[in-house]
Image (cartoon, rainbow, N blue to C red; front, side, top):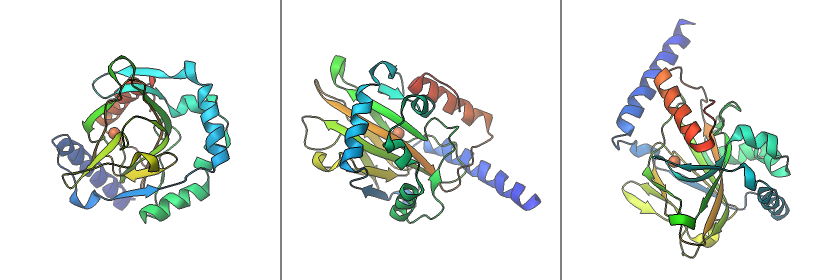
Length: 241
Ligand SMILES: [Fe+2]
């Protein structure tokens, strides 16, 4: 009991320290690995998913703030809107085992369903100056390692490389556009800097954002929770954690 309380306290302190220096650009050199999983969905499932997204047009929340410019639908809202096979697949133990296998972390799992970032949808368009997100690292509210997943559904652009860029060990990595659709990029978003290059006129990009942790226990630190709540409000117009 005392031992596990000590473990929690140490983890809370580690997370607090991490977020403090993280904002200043300090990242762990041992957390720079990225994993790429092609062909996530079967063709028919992907097709049905894209058709379902077409029906969601009025549900997108527009965000234009210090964090990002684009549209989003949070996990809480998605649950009420979608019922496709794709969601069952992403929640299946088979998919979880694929993620664990890819990262080599057998304890990696989704964060709780209470977290709207567990599975959410993001849309970027080129109209009116172009959506995007500037270079950043993500904040973390989990006591374990935070793993972000970006599953690209649509990469309709006029450029050769995909809009997502990451910076590993001070080197920028880009992805060939033709390999991006239906692929999942897994990375430590709080240790690998990343951005979404500004969208150009007529371009469109839609991704599913996934969130995993090897110890998905949410911090009790009220400041970190408040920060995440503000991000959720800005992204999904729903501050709930
Ligand atoms: Fe991010």
